[in-house]
Length: 125
Image (cartoon, rainbow, N blue to C red):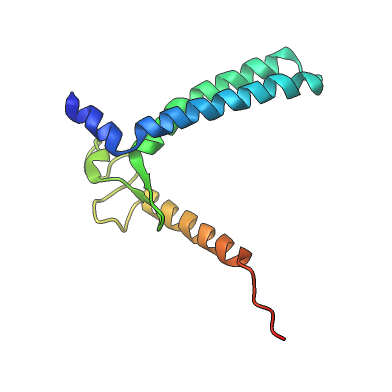
């Protein structure tokens, strides 16, 4: 059991849980101020809270599955592939195939293109 908690710490699941809780609380506080100002019906706030609560486990699973590094978003070790050879996300273990890795490469390429597009250009003259 201590190995499980050590793995949670190594994969930064604790940090994601705390960050999600803080940001969720701030967003819910802001929604409680702004929704009545826009005459939103009361069910909108209730639905918003339920959606935020339901997204919490999703955030934890994603923080377990993926590691965000300065270079790229990458799938954690093949230990996350518990459902057989291909696993949940299509991870094969070689780091190059599968749905998750293709998606990560697309996200990384888009991020790099946005960073490059936003870098200030030197003016000739």
